[in-house]
Image (cartoon, rainbow, N blue to C red; front, side, top):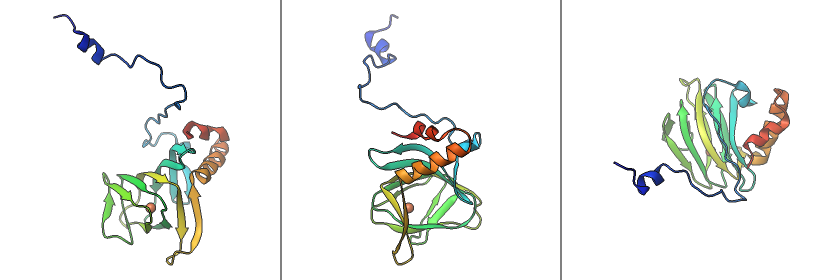
Length: 176
Ligand code: FE
């Protein structure tokens, strides 16, 4: 039976050019693999992040957060929404009675202040986070202790990639 126009169109790529001002895509293959450890940026002794997209025009970052020890990680306030998806392990917030487990999706609404804990029987957790705006680190009474935003993340990446021999500009792979 001859192919109809519809059959042929179904498998045909889009025939026009992408918009001239569209940014190039980012593809990070095997982002979870233990392959190239240089892609993981060490933040503290047991906390690492792997950048996926560092968005400077909208002020957010997508990253994998890896924690390799149980315990309290940080207390922080979010002025903007955060989306998380747990890829490995489990964690919870002291302020809530739910637990984020492997396969869980979490929406953190603007205005949330919470304290992340990795439970004693978990020796590694990895979570994919989209963080918008800033993470504002606070004490239990809300006193400001510091912050992170896409630009502090970029600075950390730049220093790290320089140190591991990829060159500071390697961070540009992830900046849009
Ligand atoms: Fe949070």
